[in-house]
Length: 435
Image: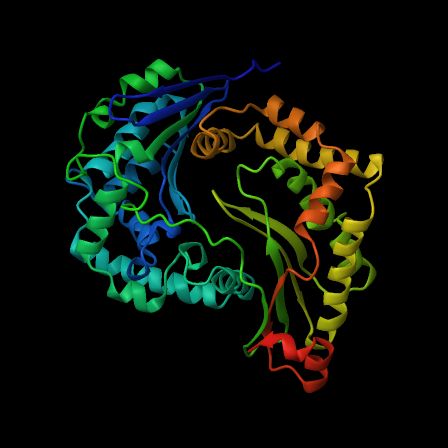
């Protein structure tokens, strides 16, 4: 039987935070988490967080981009990164024995990246291709467009990749300015999961726990200085049809959802799974299994610090849009009206707890979990605690939340697909569509 993981946390003198969770795995996951993302960009900086993520792989004063790749490949590791709307993460998967190598590479890219001009121009081309690839993925494109419509000009509504125009405008000085403003010790978390001790990690962080880092501000910056703006008080409501030369119509039905720290977040997880979180969910059974209207249909939660979105996605034939929308509305209405049975609630709880327990066997998942808990809650929550909070949710909690979230006509609808017929618009109440 595997021993229970042990968690430890240290905040250093320069306010860099280290969190570790020790597991008896052979593998080791190291993450550098930066509390910045798309919502911290000013309009002229759209896509800078993501551009910067790419550039930190492109060489330091002592390592070329190829050197970094080779050092990781030689030990069978994996080095990757991702940008989200409220944070950015750089993560390494290695064997436990390679802790020192992993921390050395991550420290090097944070402190000594050169942002070479030739590399920047090459990476600009790569990102422009990434944007085009996203535009040719209808499912990805329709969600980005939905966020843009419901959040308007706020940073939460901007595409993470930026736009073709904004990426073409970016200069090396813009990347450096954003890097030095946001990549400061007090904005960063080092997260480590694997069979290594907390003290062993601390000893190897000497370069990162220096009082000051090159080029960084000498004071703690306010949220305003960092570009943070509170989220809108409510999402913009509306119905939109965007014409695209497609065979299918890709639709998003969305409402305001809970924030990341909401007391209702566990009830929201259960509501989401029951409504559209898997093959046995209400939406999947009604729309795909019983009616055959869509290959893909699901619901999802997108929580943020001070806002959130609960959405339903489906892709269907143009003639099937009205009936597909009607079935979505009926599934939602049933959630508001009816209590889940004890058996249904237990099944959904078992689903979520099973997912959590299975992911706890992944060292990368544990590294991410302890970092996310630190970012949003400032504390550790183990698997047992999370499962206990899920068990504490009642059927009344789920229905109360459903009534709170799914109230009245407060919803937004986006359809992306071929030009609709008059008959189609009539069925969808054309007078309420924004085109």
